[in-house]
Length: 293
Length: 272
Image (cartoon, rainbow over all chains, first blue to last red; front, side):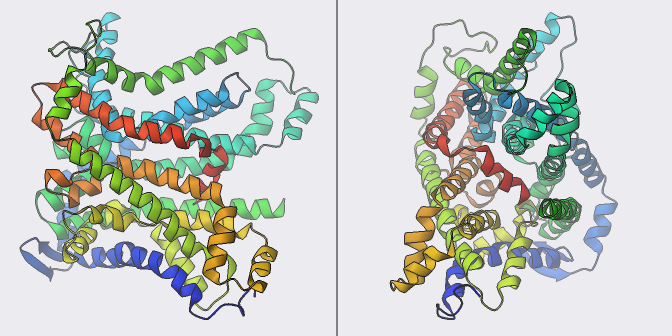
C-alpha cells in the first residue's frame, strides 16, 4: 500500500482524469459508436437508423470490398522484407563498424520523413518515363514498368514506400534486442569453437527470436492500417486496387456512407484484434520466461 | 572481444552499410536535386545549374505559410500535451493504490487495440458535434495523449525509489509538487523520447487532418502539399520544392533531439 494513506482520495483520479477523458471520448466511446453505426444506415443527411446486418451483407457481396481486403493481405508481404532489411541494418550497426552511431542516425532519417514527402520522392524515382528505377531497368534491357498506374505494380510501389519508411524504426527495435544479448554467452560460444555463423545461429538468433516475432506482429498490424503511402504514392488509382483503410476513407468521406464504412471498420478491427491478441500472448509468455530466468 | 574480423568481411559490411545509406537518403536527396533544377519538363537529369526558382515559386504561391505555422502549432501542442497528460496519468498508476486502478488500467490497455483508422467515422462526428471541425484543436485534442505514452511514463516512474517520494512527503510536499519536483526530473530521458515520438508522428500525419480540416488556411503541411500535387500538376517542380520545404523543419527538430534516440527506448515501443 505505497503512499495510499498519504494522499487525499480524489488525488489519483484528478491526475488520471484528463488522459482518461481524451481516451474515453475519442477511443472507447468511439469504439462503442462504430459498432452501433455498423448496424445502421447513416449518411451526413440522415441520422442513424437501425438496419440490422444489412451493411455486413452488402460487404460480403461487394467485389470492391473483397478486392481491397485481398490487397491488404498482399500488403502483409511487406513484413518479411521489413524484418530482413531492419535486422540486417541492426546487425551492421551493432557489428562494431566505425561510424556506427552515424549510420544509425542516417538510417533513421526515413522514419522522420513525413510520408507525403517520402511518397513525392518515390513518385519521382518511380516515374515511368523519367524515373531512376525505369532508367536502370531499361538500361539493362528489361521492360519499362508503369509503377504509378498499373495494378499490381501500384501496390508494390506503395509497399516500397512503407518498407523505406519503416525499416529504420524496426532497426532500432532490433538494436535494443541485440544489445540485450549477454556478451558472455557469445564469448563462451566463440571459445567453444562456434564460428561467426555458429554464434549467430546458436546464441544471437534464439535470444532475439521474441523480438522478431513481435516485430512481425507489429509491422503486420501497421501494414493492415496503411493509408498515406497509397493515398499519395499512387494518387488516383481506382479504389479496388487499394487496401482496407483507403476504402473506409472513400466510403465514409467520399460517398458519405457512414454506416457501411463503420461495418468495414469493424471487419478490419476484428482482423487487427486477432494480431493484437497474439501479440499480447507472446509478450506475456516472454515476460513469464524472463521472470523465470 | 571476439576474434578479429577478416578484412573481406569488413569490406562486405561497409558495402552493405553504404547500400543501406544510399537507400535511406537516396529518394529524398534525389527529390532535393530535382527541386533545385531550373523549371522544365526533364525530370531525369540533375546536371543543370542549381537554382532556388522552384522554392521561391512554392513560397510565392502563398499556400505554404499558414500550413507551416499550423504544423508547428499542432506538432508543438501535441508533443507538450502528450508528455504532460501521460505523465500526469502515469504517476498514480505507478505510485498510488486506489479503488478502480485495475479497471482504469485495463481500459487504457484496450485503447491500444483500437486503431484510429477503424473509428474515424465516430471521431469525426464527435469533432463536428463539439464545434471543432476545421480547427487546429480538432487535429490536436484526439491525439493529445496515448496509452503507449502512459505506459512508457509509468515504467519510468516505477523505477524511481519510493524513499525519495516519502522524503518529500515528510517535508510536506503535495502530490503535484512531488510529481513536478521528483517524478518529472528523474524521468527526463523517457519524457524526451515520448516528445520525440509525438513530434515525428504529428508532423507527418495525413489521414486525420485531411478529414477534419477544410479551408486552406487551416491545413497542416502534409495536407497542403497533398493539395499542391493537384494544383501544380503542370509544373511538378513547385511541389517537389514544397515537399523539401516540409521536410526541413522536422530534420532540424530531429537533429536537435537525436541524442534521445536510444535503441533501449524502442524495446518499450514494441512491447506496448
